[in-house]
Image (cartoon, rainbow, N blue to C red; front, side, top):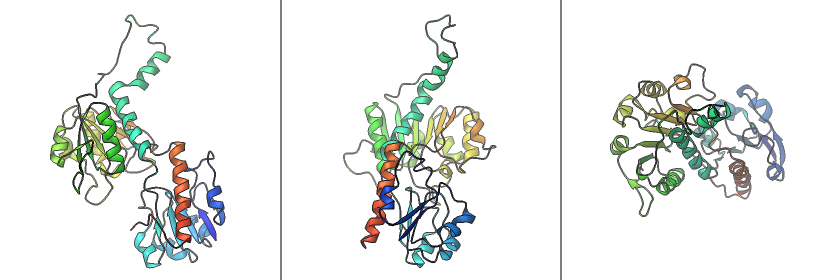
Length: 316
């Protein structure tokens, strides 16, 4: 069995092993693959794994030996699921590997916005404290999280992990879940209007669907408290980026912490790159070594389950 990994570098830039895949068949790993090179590289493959390399209907149709598609991620929008289904090809993702890391990243962004630790540490390194006439200083308001309202939109594994951390900080936690909140959760169920109106910090953990695209738009931003903070570690297109930049630059929103953007890498003229009080990290909330190790292990296990006739984590 021939296994081709089209874009393995982000999942494993060299600090992990591909051995679990090599045990399953003849393995070829490419760091990156452009769309035009996919058919040439994977034309004889039985199993193809992708992270961001797109497998559209035309490409799937051209891969005559293809029997299985694995996604080295949770999101699977890079694969034409219907085209794969017509060929009888299962598409399997990895849904649970990054939960603690993304929840941690939410608070890394939030704490930087409320404490400005990185900024103040840089001013000390630059010699400013040594030259200060006072024994301490700060450049931004320092915000206590205890007693603040944390609003969560999307209450799956990550949303519930974020709620538990928020509760540990002493925050009031509200959450919107389409199917309703189960009993005994760290968050209290609320409607979208209440969450937008009452949240001091709003964090997004919902999937990208036609209904949630530009969930954060001028109208919703106008519903939010003046000075509120928005966090997005989910999907970039959940946000109307021009509207968010306008809200930040106009002083309505107090800050934004983003790990995802609508186009990645972003165009140099993306308005959020220069927006006030906007922290952007390059889609790394998922990328700890521990999480990537779980990702590779689960992706290899997915192939093994398929080989045994019992595929798991099948999407679509």
